[in-house]
Length: 132
Image 1 (spheres, rainbow, N blue to C red):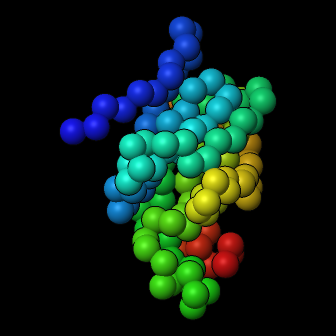
Image 2: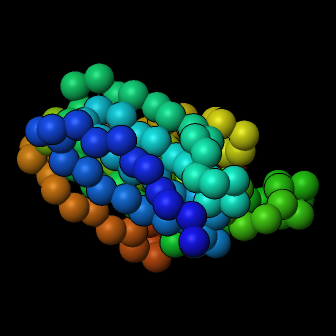
């Protein structure tokens, strides 16, 4: 069994989410998102900082398929969506693509002091169709 060392800072909330295939683990801490790779001793795979966001929750999309034929040949989870919410009231939609590429594709104001989020089947389809 491999120990997972996730750095914590006093005063920060934290949340984690696994990709559907179990390869990647995302963690939020303050205004940062860290993604580690379980296949390589949980080495850091990507990091992004969103100043002023105070992130509280993160969730990988339960399923994301791209219409790019070459991408379909890759393992599931190596190109996927994730969402994060924070006390700033914004819902952040991000795309994670190996290696080490995490980008914000949309941020919308929803409601201040958000603490949780969840994907719905309809939103998965809407986002996947608009981002390919």
